[in-house]
Image 1 (cartoon, rainbow, N blue to C red):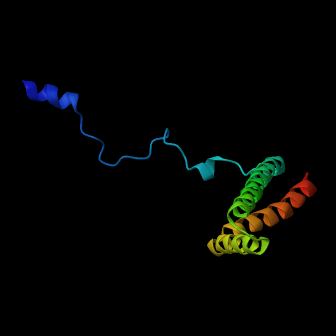
Image 2: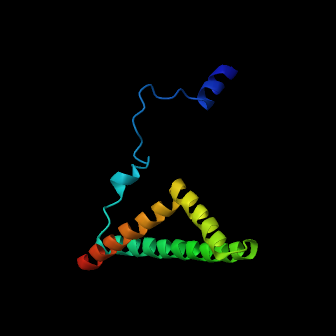
Length: 116
């Protein structure tokens, strides 16, 4: 007598399940494309971030110059060490990526301002 009760408690799943209407559609299909104002706002946010990163690097290099001045005996030695550090950053692509982002962002900002 317990078998029918067990069967009722755990019904068999449907053989051919169809997608439920409550399943979320893909985000790309659901979201409308951003308008000019949204694009401009996003580009302004990127511009602020790029400026903050640029300021951070400027501060980093200023601190580096001070630190090098404290441990090197001549200006020439100081500049040589600074050149080595900058060269290594360029080799890693970090400086190039930031400069590229700034240039790209500046050109896009002009385009966004023209749209608005």
